[in-house]
Amino acid sequence: MRADERGPGLPPFDELIEAGEAADISGWDFSWLEGRATEERPPWGYARLLAERLATAHASLDVQTGGGEVLAGAARFPPTAVATESWPPNLEKATRLLHPRGVVVVADPDEPPLPFAEGAFDLVTSRHPATIWWEELFRVLRPGGTYFAQHVGPASAFELIEFFLGPLPEARLGRHHDAEVGAARRAGFELADLRTARTRIELFDIAAVVYLLRKVIWWVPGFTVEAYRDKLRELDALIRRDGVFVAHSSRHLLELRKP
Image (cartoon, helix red, strand yellow):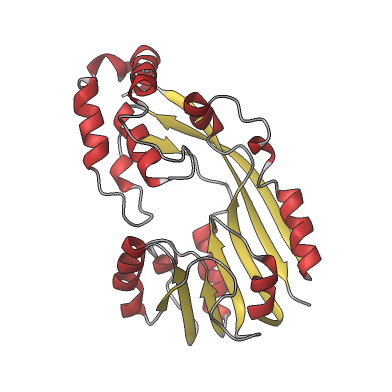
């Protein structure tokens, strides 16, 4: 079904809101959005590249692993494999997924210091970390070790975020890859690879919007359906009229080395 054919056949607004509010938002698996939303993937294939690096590492650390879904997709892990996570529902899910694979999951508040010795790992990874402490990442790597990660870039999903919050010109400048590379270099890293991508997000009903704003809580801080019901109705009407609401995600792939 084409996007422009979806609008007229949508269930009532209240029914969609109810579905979005009732959906399970634990972990970092977005399969609930199947048929409700799509997101184009960056061209480099992070999960595949991550698996290649894990297969040749001796000791690895995945920071802010979420529910462990991306990490669990690797075929092989090094003899020492550790993941950190702060949110209790994610910790539970990551433990269920990763412990049977020999990966130790550690509760960590995502604030320095990381609970590991200096030079403990030859590979540190992360997919979409919310916070980045470059000095700590540098400290726990061995000399010659690698930080390999996919980060969220500037103004990601801002068409949706600004629909609810209004223009955010300063926030649009945050998370820029040039600024992150500069901070990493100041911490002592050398840049081995940098790739960037701007990809398309399509939202086909308001239930998908509610689900995302409940799950990705930093997009619209303090989001509740009650507080934003009028804006949700307005966006629902736009989706019914156009068949889709389009936003864009911003991503960059970083490979950094400790000399």
